[in-house]
Image (cartoon, rainbow, N blue to C red; front, side):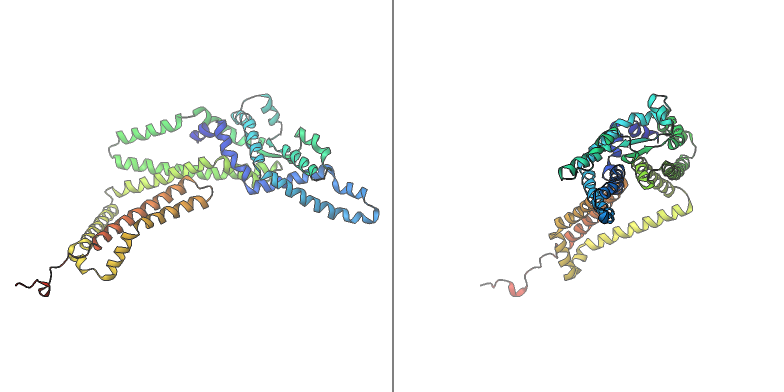
Length: 399
């Protein structure tokens, strides 16, 4: 967590880059579009205005007309929210509020943090989207909303903002954040040094290393559970402040995604290391497992030698020869298929994590390794038996 705080949470450029996907999230876009549309119609009270214009007998159609216009306006808002304009607005808003966010979590006493501590929340103002929608509607012959431009320019409407942090959330997270910000690189460096020292002075180094590895894995599991509990606290605090819980959950997961991905990656590495350390140890089952693996490897080597020997080539069936020839002829295509499948996985999977990419590359490497063994076998089989000597009937007749 200290590495995450130093690299992302307190670094403005990386923080903005981390939060950028929120601007393209369909749930956030749909929620924000609905709020902006509702704010436009609530502020203007369009239904009442339409009723005042219509004759008394036609007043019942005011509500259907308003609903129809509200659907049309919502589509215009969605177009702007899905355009690069909103992404730029979102990134600029995060860049402006980042310094305040760090100061607030660090417990600094500034004019801005004092205002936020009086029950206010740190928000990203998206009122310019409402102003842009009003301008677009005016160009399409719908000037009803022009009077709202000065109101939106002030950015005082709660409906035209996305909450980043509330005072309740700050009170729960500031202590841990401030501590990790002060410690910075000290925690990971000291941890690694102590682990190395423990192994170095230990009489039974393998067992000490294994215990450190398992202990680290258990610590990460506890930390991941703690993050899950913090997620619930964060969302509940946002809901108490009147903000959408689903959007708050997306904000939390997006902000901490690199931290969680890093923890999962290290956890799998530690689990793999612990397994290796156990396998090479003197435990009865570990010794038996190594013995069985050695027997399996010896059997595989003998099977390969027998399959590629001259006797095996001579005894190879016509089907095996045809299969080997096909493999040798299409080996480039078979390699290409593996690369294309993994490439499609990267393209179609969307925001793939580092762990997912690593697994995909390991599967591709295993595929290439097995394919190379198949190609080697095909090269031996497809060579065919040596050319036989000419028969007696084919001998030249002596004169």
